[in-house]
Image 1 (cartoon, protein in one colour):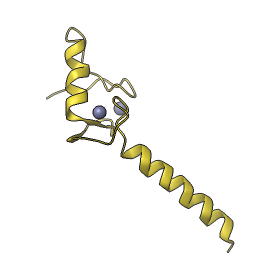
Image 2 (image 1 turned 90 degrees about the vertical axis):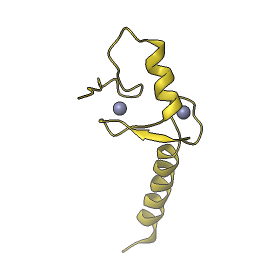
Image 3 (image 1 turned 135 degrees about the vertical axis):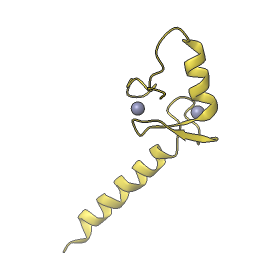
Image 4 (image 1 turned 180 degrees about the vertical axis):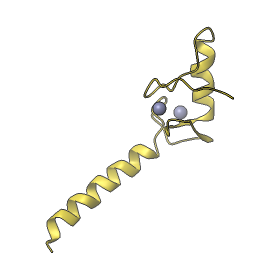
Length: 71
Ligand SMILES: [Zn+2]
Ligand SMILES: [Zn+2]
């Protein structure tokens, strides 16, 4: 049992938490967050703007490019 790995784990968890709280489109804290099928989060406004900008294409996740199917 050593202190060091615990500290590293905590630092990673904090970094992960911050990236989970930040929208990859506007790089701000989420506003009205929505979750896509792939598990990525975006502001509702950001994902709508993204998809409206390329209305002729299939809707896909701006982060991992997975196509989102609406059933
Ligand atoms: Zn956003
Ligand atoms: Zn994604």
